[in-house]
Image 1 (tube, rainbow, N blue to C red):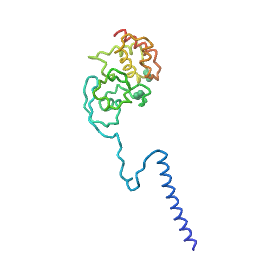
Image 2: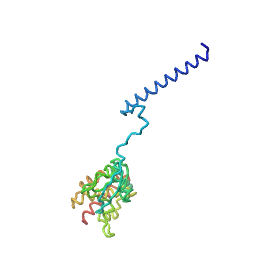
Image 3: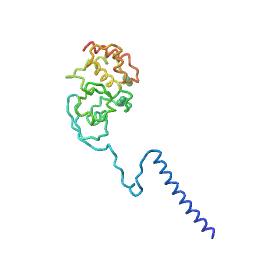
Image 4: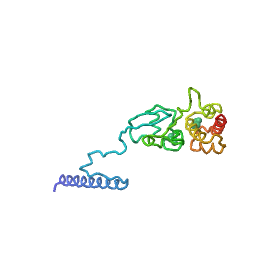
Length: 206
Ligand code: FES
Ligand code: FES
C-alpha cells in the first residue's frame, strides 16, 4: 500500500471516530439534562413550545374592565405595565423577592410578577393608579409625601399597596403590624422608619 493510501485510510477512520464521539456526546448531554431528543429523522420539525398560545383575557383593574388578547405566559406585572400602560406598578427583581410589583387582588397584597394575567380574571385588581379620587391623593400617598417616606421612589407604589391592604382591614394598626405588612417590600434606599411613620399617620387620617 502506498503512503497516500495509508493517509486516506487514516483520515476516514478519524472521521468515523469523531462522528461516533459526536453522537455519543449528544446522547450523554440529553441524558444529563433530561432532554428527550427526537429521532434524527424528525428533529428538523420544531417542537411545539407550550405556553405561547394567545388567548382572550378580561381583567378588572381599578374598577375598569379591559379586554385583551395575550400570551398565556405573561405575568400580571408585565401586562399592567405594557398592555394597560399602568406603569405605576414597578418591576424590580421580577422573581418574587423585592415587592416593587405589589398590587391588591381581592383585598390581598400580592406580587404581580409571580401571577399569570390569565389566572386573575374575574378578580378585583387594585394598582397605585386607582388610589387617588377626583385628583385628590389617598391619605397613604399624602402621608408618604409628608413623612418623606421615599428616596428613589422605585419601591414606593409597592409599599403603599401593601400598606393599603393592611389599612383596608385594620384601621388602627400597631407599629409591629405595619412592619409585618410591608415586610415583603424591600427599600434599597432604606427609608423604612419614614415608611412606618407614614403608614401610621395615614391610619390616623383614615
Ligand atoms: S418585581 Fe415582583 S417581587 Fe420583585
Ligand atoms: S425609596 Fe428607593 S428603594 Fe425605596
